[in-house]
Length: 306
Image (tube, helix red, strand yellow):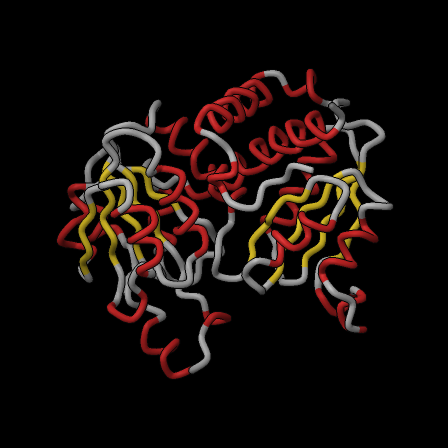
């Protein structure tokens, strides 16, 4: 049974097709309003979430389907010791498709291997977050018209940022992409992402600790939150949490057509004064995420029925 665990599970052609469907949903919402009538999505969220969980639920409701599930591990049988594998087998008896978030890397893969219905990874620890990447890709496409020949800056927590890891993997398959990696030394991109994606594909990239030095070169700036929940040491978190704050002064150094993105939630990384700048795209990102999840649900359910 096919699911989506990592963004590279889908070919470039399949992602482009999802973008086409999402654009059609934006233009013709009524056409899709009953596409999932009689179908159920199970949202299994073992970790807190606002946007991703509600986005999946909104997506399924707007397709005419229904939603079951839980929003925290404490309300599931995992508190009794039930394994992810068994949970996946059980939920397969109740629903047609699963969206799952879990704090442990690899958990979504375990669920997919044991479920008899499609499983969508809604975030597994610090590993990856493929549906956020779909939202990111639609945002970039609608802002830039293409993925080719872009200079993309990724700023903040590049070590634990699963959204960053997924986006690099996705964009690495398009031509002419250059990455600018902006982070404190302690939160640099993991070596496995650099080796398996950037170096393996011969992609140009630079690493820096200064946002001001490079912001003028960027077509896209992807800001990220320093994630308190990934730190073992509170002192390290407090020392690093405000490493980068995008404000109007820094933004004045950027191109007029820069696209500023953020997977949210925002803490201090972007000043609220930036929200009214036409280059701010992060709330559009939220909306585009719903449309891409609608397209993804449709694709996986159609394939499951073949």
